[in-house]
Picture (cartoon, rainbow over the protein chains, first blue to last red):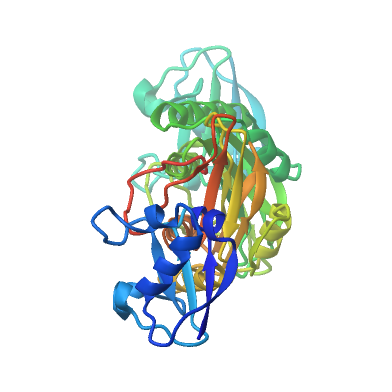
Amino acid sequence: MKVNVVAFANFREILGKEIEVALPAGARLRDLLDLLAKSHLGLHEEVYEPTGALKDTAMIMLNRVNIDSQGGLDAALKEGDELAIFPPFAGG
Amino acid sequence: MKVNVVAFANFREILGKEIEVALPAGARLRDLLDLLAKSHLGLHEEVYEPTGALKDTAMIMLNRVNIDSQGGLDAALKEGDELAIFPPFAGG
Amino acid sequence: MMIHIGPEDIPLEEIIRTAKRPEVGAVVTFLGIVRDDGIDGMEVEAYEEMALAELDRIREEAMDRFDIRSVDIVHRVGRLSIGGDLVAIVCAAPHRQAAFDGCSFVIEELKRRSAIWKKELSAKGDRWVSGLGRRPIDGDQDSGG
Amino acid sequence: MMIHIGPEDIPLEEIIRTAKRPEVGAVVTFLGIVRDDGIDGMEVEAYEEMALAELDRIREEAMDRFDIRSVDIVHRVGRLSIGGDLVAIVCAAPHRQAAFDGCSFVIEELKRRSAIWKKELSAKGDRWVSGLGRRPIDGDQDSGG
């Protein structure tokens, strides 16, 4: 299956603005992040605390909804999903 | 002695913007207002309550200072004084 | 900084542009305009020397009270139409809260303390607007924002 | 009413002029500009679809909460110089208090809820500004008013 990843601010600098990623069926958010971290230097440190928890400064939306309400790192992905990753908002 | 009277808003409509008034030596504010009221229709009603007290809506400054701190209607006038009379401020 | 009372149009864009300095991050502008409360327009007059001196004091108080870098105050006089600019206050500060607080402070003090009067003009009869002098009034009772 | 995110100059005078309607007596404008905190400028980016949708919700909430007649929100993106306009919010109301409250509400909610990010550019190194997302921060910690 393919999912679309859009990234902003420091995450855009690491990942690019928009990338398409091919994943095996049944993949979860954690799998996607691990796959991306392999090919994008610095991503792991921007996403994870040393404990393995998601950093407060890594905000992830799955289909425009925060992943906290969708199982967090265990959220199941499906074909065509849009994942957005960015730091806390700093507009205005 | 001569005093200068400047008037604004409803008082300007009655008195004109600026007038010079000749008064006998020793005249007080009350004397000036009574003299003006003789020649300016409607002034008395705009200045005085039926009780004879100054209306809240008649603000009088003697040389740019409120007459309340200068003896009120008994304030003594002298040559060259500037009297200003206007309603409460309504700018903005 | 500009403190002015006059019949001319208010050069708002120029005032705002001038308020921008390197240390300024927020510019808050209050623009009071003549509201249509069933009137045809407004006639505004000022005791200019007295009002200008008081506006200057208000500006100084605002600069003392809040962390702001500039205050501009322009009040129009003469005959104004519905939608016409009545007063503009432009307050510039490093941070937004001070700019909001300063701007709000200045318009409240201006209404209470500056020697300016407004007459509502209407076919049904002209009416001097009740002011905020000795008898403070809650809220707006006039057509000036 | 205008909600816009883009690199263009903000047509502030036109927005204010359009906000004037017969029932409006007060127009309050917040203009956020790039402050010189020892930086050379700023780079701003937005998740545009998400930010626009949220700004629209913020405007609706402001119109529900306060007695206001219009809210305009324009946020710039791209490379901005010191003193450059970053964001403008124009709030028009019959009375001044609602115009101030609405304008202040919109900028606070925009900072907290809109998907926009700023990077401070400096010879000493660029730095993404810490945002107000999951970890609310008191006061301003960035160069944007």
